[in-house]
Image (cartoon, rainbow, N blue to C red; front, side):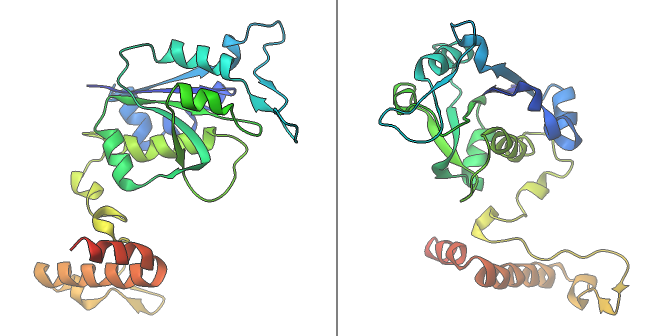
Length: 232
C-alpha cells in the first residue's frame, strides 16, 4: 500500500523540497509514497483569488477563510478518505515519535498549512482537524512543519531505511534519547573510542549503550526519563 500525502498550501512550489532527496526522494521514486501539493487559491471564488479576510473582533493580520479552505479540503479528501486531516499549528499537540509511527502505519495524511494569523476556528471544528505542533516556536507558515512531519513519517515506511533496526534504536524509541555513536579512526584529536565498544562483548555493549542513553536523557530531557520510568 502506497502512503499518500496531500498538502494544502498557498505555496505548492515549496514541495517536495527536501522530501525529493535522500531516503524520502528515493522512496517517492520507488512508489513507496506519493505527495500532492494543492493550491488553496484554486478554491477561491473571486477574481482576486482571495483566501483571507480581516479578523472578527479586530486585531492585526488576516485570517484564512473557512469557506475557501472547506472547498479545498473536501476536494482533496472526499467522503470515505481514511487519511487523518492534520493542521500544522504552534498551538497543536506536540508531535511525538509515537504519533509519527502511527501515521506511518496508516494510509497517508491530508495536511493543511496555515498562513497569516491563523485559520477560521469554524473550519477546524467542522472538518475535525487534528492540530499538530513541531515545537514551541513560530514559523511563517505550516509548510516547513509539514515537511518535517512527512520526513519523520516517510523514513519509517517499510523498505525506506536500509537497516530496519535503525528506526528502533534511535532517540525517543523506548522513551530515551539515543546513546552516543563512534566510528573510525580509533583516535581523534586525542579522544579514543570507548574501550567497551571494541571489546566484542555484545552484552556489555548493549548495557553500556542503555546506561549512556539514560544518562544523556537525565541530563537533557529529564521529563522523558521520568515518563519512561513510570512505564516500567
